[in-house]
Length: 143
Length: 311
Image 1 (cartoon, each protein chain N blue to C red):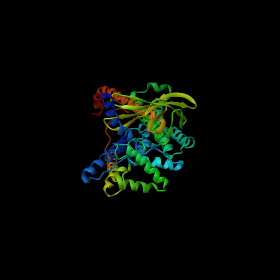
Image 2 (cartoon, rainbow over the protein chains, first blue to last red):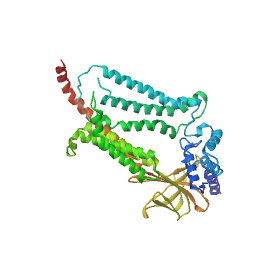
Image 3 (cartoon, chains in turn cyan, blue):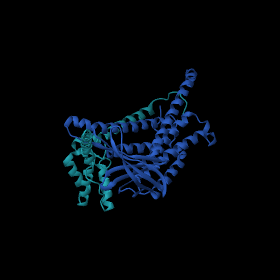
Image 4 (tube, helix red, strand yellow):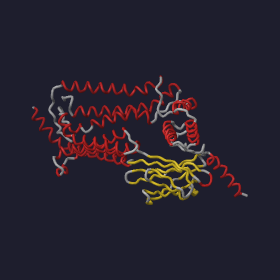
């Protein structure tokens, strides 16, 4: 009796984990469409995982989203339409490449600004160094 | 103090590009946090952002790197430097054409990476050769010469690894029952059996998969899919098999009825070069420190003499 109870408890604990597989994997018959699906999967972040795309993740939701993408590609939707749908459901968070819009201007153009500032510093430093008189070198040249 | 074309400017350009890449990475990492804190909007910044922003900076850096050691302090001769590097440039062009012709899929990005890798390694060799004068004399070179050659050449090796592992990687997924095989990039993977194993806090499905390379049996891998009751979430332990110059990853993905499994396999050619390149660069750094220690010790003797001359 105790053995039966223990077995039942273990089964109950393990059952949800085993059942949590998500939609089964079924590659698309057309290899070009399958390649499109794989490429698109790499651009979509798994919403419940830390850093993985749905291509890499083994989470239930990732498997469901992979099937969703395949169904929509087979139905003739474009990559943009599928991404729009996923963004409307999960937010911009689901895209690996952040959109270029009002609140991401600093993200996309920040690096450019930094590079311009750094470039200006380099240019000014080189211009000033050319004008300064020579100073005797103490260190020998090294490789 | 120094002309626009000189080793000093080379070091400035180096600092500018590396700092730019670091600041860009910092912006990409911190921006989602800042935006979330400020407006509650959730964003993610993934590999595509860095591919557009950081990778070009490193490409420019790679083009400039072989010139640095060829330029002298205060006033460098760019034309002389280019003349010393012409063999490295030619080799790089040939290698990138070979990459376009020989490897599939045909990839411009891959050809550029092969060009830069060959350019860096060739440029480092040219630098050593110029310092030594001949192949035989290279063993008398000071640590400082080896420092820059290893550091720059190491990045070239790393560039090859990154090119192979990202541009020319293969992946495949198959639905196999025991005894069936699936192909990937010259390998054949045969699922022999799966069994249940138990660990201290998990229960797992463990597969035995035989790897065939060009028809010959080449080893066995054991990917697992573990279930931790405490977390109610399955975790996959993929098997990684590194053979010389490539990585083979095999993942036990999803079970099906009747003992069938979905198996995913990935081959990343040249991936071990990423690690090797980094190790070589670290070695270059160590040589640089040794060279600096040696120079500090000898300059303590030289400085009083130079000060005497200046007066």
